[in-house]
Image 1 (tube, rainbow, N blue to C red):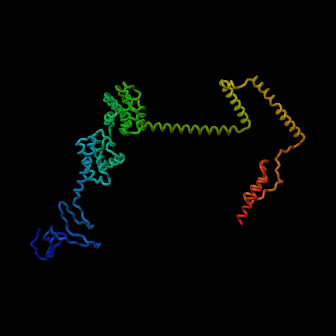
Image 2: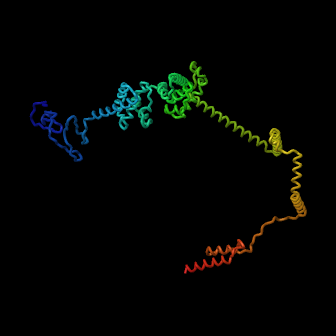
Image 3: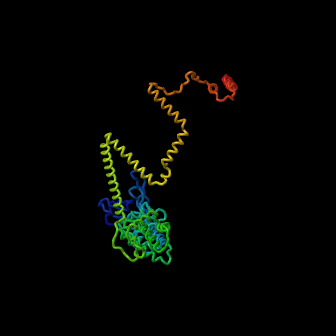
Length: 454
């Protein structure tokens, strides 16, 4: 494209596609397309092709690093969006969601792509998070676990980060949305609508008593469905409820315990269906904290009482240091023990049968004395002899065993055979053993040893 009539000293730059006049400095022609391939040298000595390369439907330009930037970035993003749309349709069709929900989820997915939220994350997790956002906005009866095939915690983390990235404000989950869904899986038959109605009334009652606040909807639904089923003579076990709602047993027990502490739990079935109590209970967390505070204060008061009792005992012990006080305390203790024993013995029929009366004691004493007469006389003689020795100044030394000091210490044996021979000669085990024959055995072993050494 010519911009001036100057024809002097024109220089053509094939790399940039310009033709410039060296006198006036103006660009005479631009966007010159040539079919020649020229190369230039980079700072590191590498050769780089100059100009643009145009192919059918695609183009690339050289960058400052010597590489080429593909101009199909738009096509790549469109491919990612198409993959997300296909994944959203698969998940939505599996969960019986409408076309309107798919379109809304696709808009959230496009926003996630614009914010580069898909980088480093699986397409299925991002698509599931977008669909769950739509379900929360539209207040459908879908749970997060419905969108997860493997790890629901990973999907939950993706969902929370996407909500934070897009600055969304989601409404709180109402457990009443899931009552009909779970009731259909518990097979209540013709009474399904009645059970659902009472379960929804229980949900409203729990919301009134602050049990629903801060709790997951699945636990509230499980407790309400279990109570409503029992109200209509459906003996559904906790295990059956847990398998449908997908919670643990401890969560269900906690919700039931919290409802048990409310005034509504004391009503009959007819009263509960017809009467709505206007009073509300404190939140369970507040009640639990207050109970813990009472326990702590009771422990502290018990500790203070124990401390005061210990101090009182110390003061009493300081007072009772005199001998007269101690003797008096001992007498009082003995009298007190005797009094307690008398009361126990008088009131216990079995002990009365075991204890002997005076006649039985006298009879048994005479029998024992006659049986041990010789031993009693011998003990009495020893006692008299000890008294006489004490009066005469005779001191009797106690008997001690005499040690045999005549035996020479056993010399150290040189061989095991010699040690065994000396031991047998010193201690005769039995008279039936021929020790001479044993000596010959040891002599033969000693001769054999000397021959082998030679």
